[in-house]
Amino acid sequence: MAEPSSSLSASKDDLIQLIKRLGTYLSGNISNLFSISVQKLDPRSVGAIAGLAVAIIFTYRLMRSPAAPPRRQPKLQAPRTRNSALSTLSNQTLMPSGVNSSSDDLRAQNVVDELFQPVKPTLGQTVRQKLSEGRKVTCRVLGVILEESSPEELKKQATVKSSVLDVLLEISKFCDLYLMETVIDDESEKNVLLALENAGIFTSGGLVKDKVLFCSTENGRTSFVRQLEPDWHIDTNPEIVSQLARFIKYQLHVSPVRPERTAANVFSSPSLEHFFGCV
Image 1 (cartoon, rainbow, N blue to C red):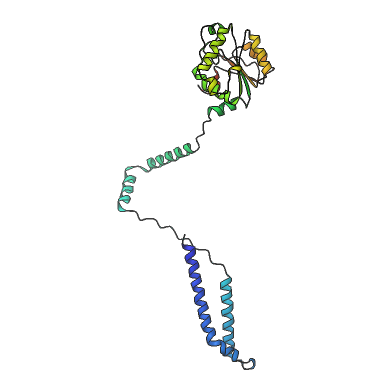
Image 2 (image 1 turned 120 degrees about the vertical axis):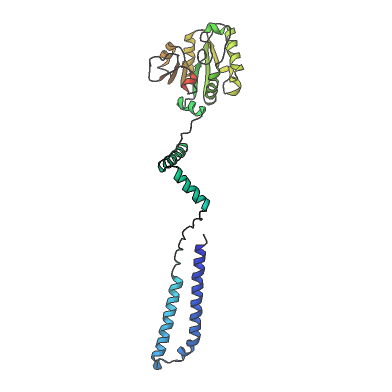
């Protein structure tokens, strides 16, 4: 890094020395030059004038010319100690060249694999991607969020599946989520709301109790969905999924057995969490 400054300093020193020599030369000859008349010029005087002119021109060009770019000095490698040389020699002697080359290639490949390893998306990113940026979602409770699969079971208890909680909370953060279910009596409604509350769904996400809807028939759930006009509806009943295919942009049919695809906008999955890659 010090090469440019040292080169520039050397050029300045040469220029100063040249100017000093020119000054000495001029001091000794300037009086003689001006004392000579034009009519009495002899070869010696002409030579002095020519030398002065050449010196002036050379000095002017030297001052105008750009400094030459500094030459880079080759980097000096630190001398290898005797111990390191012996160690390298012993390693080369003990390990065949093919094995050494293979291990180097393997280490290089491992470094490349680590650098270009794809970054796994977060659950929130996966939810938004899977839902195609949909902003409103309606979802059945039985068989999707609860362990129970029939309205009769809700009369006794309601149990939220632990595996679905993270997905449900991410959906409620990103989307306007409505839960709905067909129930037989008021006691079933209380059991469902209590189970959701105990699971922390109403406190951790954007879901509120007013967005949990209950009806007494399956047709009532279909009517709820059509009135809300969601971007996605999630259900386990194939008849409801088939009826809503013409009206809802996307649907997810949750079924343990993969059904035949009834429409291009209907997807199927064994569970809600499986659809979002949580299983």
